[in-house]
Image (tube, rainbow, N blue to C red; front, side, top):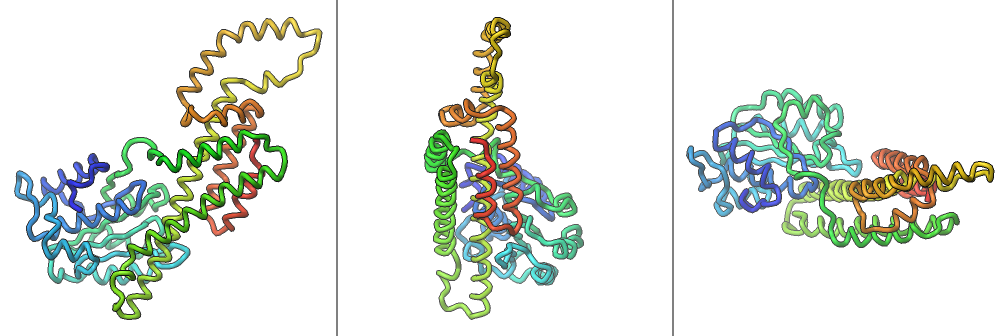
Length: 376
């Protein structure tokens, strides 16, 4: 792909091409976005543009896009260009090790073999362990001439400041939250409807957990199938054993990385739904409606309701304008059963569960504990 094909990342691409046209090529870039696959494609296109034999040139005759057809472009696309090096987490724990970084630094310090630039692309740079990051700092700060480092991440907030501060950051995530697919909206609708039913029994809670676990299982299976089909293991059956083992390790780590990213997106989606519940509890004030009124204070309570009545529609309209999913009535049904304090605790539970899932805790256990703590 050439830069002209990245219509969804138009703003970031435009900034990148402008810097190329003006001859202001950075020595290190940090590409951040929602989809690692898109970031890899962008990094690959930048590597092709820098080393293209027939590039598209701007007004100042500097290359601003690749031809996508020459031998250099084809080699980079197929991952066998001698001057373009990829580093990915190779273990199931998704850590880029110091050994990988030392090997990369050795490669990047050599002169280009067949192209103008040496390009190093670090996938999921947020997975650099502390030792690898420290070893990489000097090269990142002062890379060799005619070399460009491209760091990719879907979680920029998890990158060490010492790393991110030495890069030119370009955001390819677009404005606001990632739009939902039709499949995601349909799943959330089903989850919302199920959560809206009475959830006092333990059996109903585990049914809700089963819906979540089935969704995650389907995501993992689809990820394994997709990444395995695109792995070089499928294209180069006659590769030597050492290279195939390296590709297998990269594939395992890539599957785990993509699955965790998708799982994080799903948890954020649920957190947005629980935020809708909280907003609707604030608008409806269920804690006031549920409070028992003594007979002697009934007239005072009726007067308070009459005064508040004129503000209720205004509060509801304000909440509707802030809702992420106003079309899902399940959130409103849950809001009618719980207080705003309980709804706020739900958000805290979701955040705690997210943090636990970043650790090595068993996934099903973390989700089970979190779901049982929710007020529904």
